[in-house]
Figure 1 (cartoon, rainbow, N blue to C red):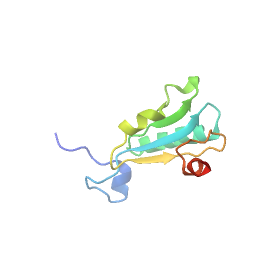
Figure 2 (figure 1 turned 60 degrees about the vertical axis):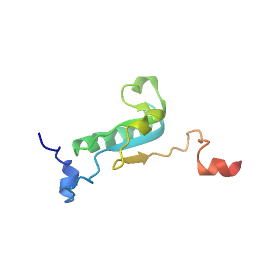
Figure 3 (figure 1 turned 180 degrees about the vertical axis):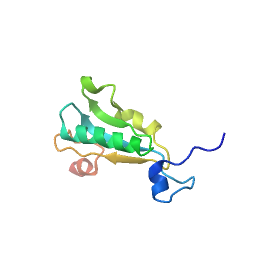
Length: 107
């Protein structure tokens, strides 16, 4: 059995090498029902998968109704390969993370 075919999006751009991106994951501070960012992430995941990419949603906080739709943010590190992309969705309403450059500057 030979190597897996590149995703359709890679073929459309002429990228057929082993260096092609294979996954597009998303990271959100909060994933909750009815939230615009969460809904956009869900639609984007569907589009990425339809294009042939592996795609998961990871969130720091996941509403109980969406536990089957997302993974904890802490699981992201073990799922990302060297050629994968992670899209971070910034949310104004999210608690500011201590590891952010802005919070480090605040002391």
